[in-house]
Each structure stands twice: as structure tokens, then as C-alpha cells.
Length: 611
Image (cartoon, rainbow, N blue to C red; front, side):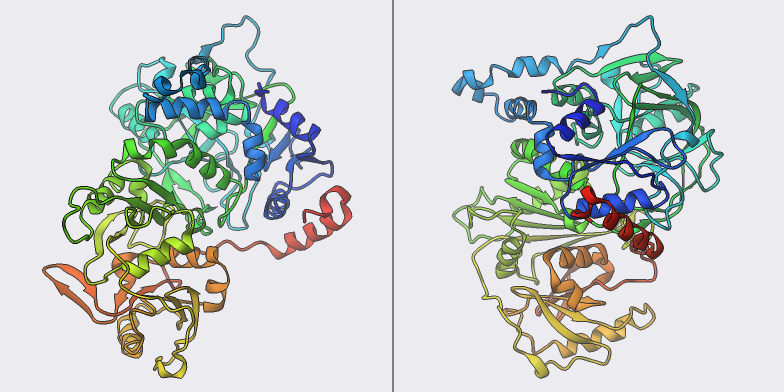
């Protein structure tokens, strides 16, 4: 079945044992989020909260909490949408197997949005911001946020819904300097479609009207984060994945999704900003308070029997990991078309997505020469120059012709392949003083930092160490200790607390201590605050290493040199992944709340197994 509403989806999940109702009243201030986190961590069911303190509305979360449930929700439409995507990747497929694609034209028809013309009111009722489930997820959050918003905007003077942009831009409902019920915050980042519209409105005399949808068919939230080509409206994708045309109406000059559970309309205040944040974000740290645009609230609508759809973000993996999983399944066939020569990419979820991008390219044009990174560097520049991949901070790219079984999704094996072949004298390519993800505070300023491309091609040049046997022969300086292996060829060393005043001196001493380590054994060394924690799991290593380092400032090497402005090293590469003074604080739960929710789970039979 294809769901016409979020409530219909919830009823189906409950019928099939994939949803639990929570009948007890919970406080939206931290308690609801704590319940969600625990159930998600244990790969539990979707959650329907019947009583949210201070709100007459029910709320739902964790419907995408497992890959299996996400696939179940889209089970009747995903294959057909994939076929349409595959046709774009290779239209000749329809000639090779025409009967396999008979549903593609039908699926394409659902991409056409449907304007609703009704005499009766579009929505059941109106409400106000303070009556919504004002869910706050982390102790230092600046207020309550919409965590699964679908923010729709159009260019000035346009009522062509096909020219609309729908994005998942953070909406702050309360706190800071916002006047409750009258103002809400609008946070968007680099390379977002709404920014183009915002600039056009700044250059016009028209009011910048924005509509924010919450809920609706599950495909609608997914469409807001789908990386579509510029100029292709998200309403088309939402319709195809829902198996039902995107329905909309116009009210007071605002575009309204008539399938949404809630709609907030408002006008962006021109040339003014207010502090937005802090907010516990998907890198596992707080994005701090910064000035952002805000809206004057016009109306808040809701349908009959609505569900407030929310999620809780934090250090990955979280529920939004399923979005990345689904996106990868859909766009993988398009990768070669969008990025010629690229066979596979993986924006690594455990590293916060944008801090680390793994890619497999191909050296195709000079098979008669000794293989070295050439074409894959062009492919790397293409990745860093287009769309969401342009936000990558570290890009590790391998030539896939040497190893046809190589996959960016087998991360240990991918790094082993890279480190067996990398030549630190040649294969490091920095971009300094450039833009990085808004949420990444490892750089030199807000949105400012550096990038590093590690490009590897050719045959294996070393045998990586499987165990650490150097022991006391390493002359670690004071403050450095507890070396532990993260994987083959990767060594993590506990360092002293970071101090920018003496970091250069400390690093020089460390490099001397590491001179006895053979680059063929351990080509990569990471300085961390806690080597035991960092090496405990692959996810810990990915998160610490790539969210806490800025390539231009935090990379060193034994035997480092600069030749014709190219930096390299002859010995092991060193990444300083310690916490720095300018980093955002990491997310820590409130102990009073966790203690209370401990008791809640113990006393709640259906939930106890998930907490």
C-alpha cells in the first residue's frame, strides 16, 4: 500500500507490530528525546507519544529507525522509483528489457503535483506555536526545534509549484530572542536551494513567504533531504516515492501541502537576523549560537487527528542514518553520469557525513604508463566542486581498477587498501582557506577551514602491521602514552590536553619519538585524548579522527618537507585529533533526566525490552 497520510502509516506499523504507543504523559523538555534515543539505539519500534505535556497533539518518531522498517514503508514504490532513476542513468535499459520498465511511465505520472481546489477549508483547524509539542533534545539546546521540517519556498513572482524548493532547514520554535507565537528561527547552510531564493527576494520588493510542513506521507520528509539536481523540484520526487501526487493549495499567498499534518506559514524578515541555536546536531556536537534569518509567523494549521513528526539527532548513527541509506540505494546508478570515472562514493555517516568522503575512481587513459594518481585527481576535484560532495573535508579516493572488489562501504578494507599503496611524499593534496560544513567547528572559523584529498593509485608498496610490537623502543615525550591500534597500519596515541601555545614544540618532540616507527608498518598515526575509547570501535575512530581535525592545521608528518609548495612526508602521517579550545562541546545527556527515564522504562512493560 501507499500511504495517504502519516496517520495511515502509523496505523499500518502498529498493525504489523512495528510501532508502540506510549500512553504516559512525558515532558517535551528532554524526556521525549531520551526515550527516543534509547529505543533507536536498541533498534526498537516506531514510537507514538499519546500525551506530550503542554500540547493537545500526539507525536511520532523513529518510523525510519531501522533500514528494514524504512524499506517496508516504501516497499510498494521504491522499486518503481529506482527504475525511473535507472532509466536516467542508462535509458538503453528499456530497450534491453522493455517489460521490466512497464510501470515507469505510471510512476513518472505521480511526479506531477496536483493542485487542490476545494470549497471547504483545507485544514481542520488552526493552532499556535506554544500548543505544538515543543520538543527539546539536548540540555544546551537553545529551545524547541522542528527536526523534520519540509520548508517550501518559490522564486519572487512565481506560483509555479515545479519551481519550488523544499529543504530540511532547521526551524527554532522557542527560546533565545524569539517572541513566542510570533517569530521562529530559520537556519540553513551552504549549498542550499533556499539561499538562491533568499537572495532573489533581497533584490526584490516582494515579501519572502515561506511554508513549513510537518508530517504528511513519509516520502515528504524524505524528499526534503534528497539531493536532487538543481532545477528539479522536490515535489516530483515526493509524489513518485509516495505513489501519490503531491497535493497542494494556495492560501493567503502561501503554498500549502494539503497532505501535511501541520503547516506553519510566515514571512522572512528582510535584512534582519536573530541568534539561533545552540542545537545538538548530527556531528555529535552542538552547533553554536549564530545570527540567522527568522520568520514572522502568519498562521499555524493542522489536519484532523494530526501527528507531530520528529526525530532526535546526535552523534551518528541516528534515525536520519536511514535517509543516507535510502539515498545511496537510489542515486548509486547515477554516480557515473554525475561524476564520470567515479564508480562509488560514501559520505561516511559515522564521521558525521561531510567530514569524510570515500570514493573509488578510475585511471583509464594511460594504461601503458606506470600507474600513479592522475585522472582520479581530476575526479576528486569534480567531487569537491559539485553539490553536497563539495562539503567534504577529507576525501580519500582510490583507483578501482587494481581491486575490482574494493568498496567504500567496507571501511576497514578500504583504508587498508589505501594505506598499503599511499605515498605521503606524493599523494596529499590540500585546499587551504576554503569553505567547510557549517556544523563543523574543527576549522579556522565559522564555515572556514581546509580540505585534503588523499589520492592513491598503483600496486601495493607495503605490508601493514597487524599488531603493535614497538613497545618501549618508541621514545614518546612526556604527556604521550598508551599507543593502541585502530586497524591494520593505524596507530592511536593518547596525547596531553591540547594547548595551542606549545603544540608545535610538542609535535616536534613527538615526531622525533616516532622516527623508529617504520612507515611500512604504521603509515597513519592519530593523536587523541583517549586512545582506548578511539580504538574500541570503528565508529569511534571515524568520529574522533575526522570531526576533530582540520587538515591544514592538524596534519604533521615524520620527515615532513615542502617542495615547490607541495607538502609531504617520508615517515608516518600524523593527524592531531584532540579536542581544541575552539571546538563545539560534544553532546552529553542530563543525568537527572536519564535517571527518571531509567525508572520509566522499568515500569513500562511493552517498552522495557527496548530501554
